[in-house]
Amino acid sequence: MTQKLTNQRPKIALFEPDIPQNTAAIIRTCACLGAKLEIIKPCGFLISDKRFKRVVMDYMNSDEIEFYESSDHFFKSKENQRIVLMTTKASISYTSFKFNKNDTILFGRESGGVPNKLHKNIKNRLKIPMKKNMRSLNIASSVAIILAESLKQTKFI
Image (cartoon, rainbow, N blue to C red; front, top):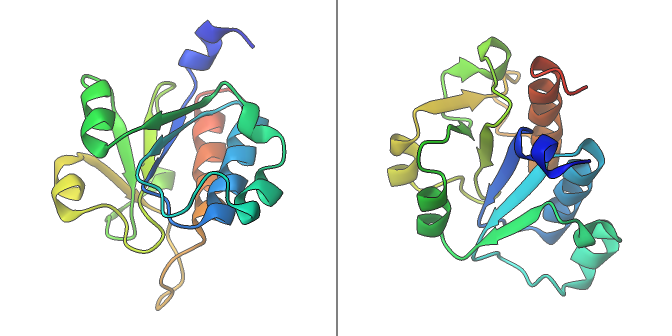
């Protein structure tokens, strides 16, 4: 895959992920579907964690993973780029949203999403509709659903 093509694909961003197995599964999903993964530190685990390594296998060597030291660094690098926040607090379903080829799709921490100040500053906020009284899907499942829809809409799959 050429660098030019990769730059036009959606990017998945994880805000301070907490659970090593989820992050490892997301790394594998992004590697297999050709999406770039961006991880905003600090993480709630060490990359050397054996639970992380067991799930990530050899996908961690991908050139398509970028780490940001903080959310400030992440948002500064995204000036003039569209960020789409996936949140259970949104009113718009991902099924009624038009994804662009170069979107960055942001997912919050498993334990608490993104801070309110970030939530309020992101214009595009989407949810995955669920049955009433259900709290949330696993983040790895949510990433797979949204990434597949984004790739479908932008004609990459």
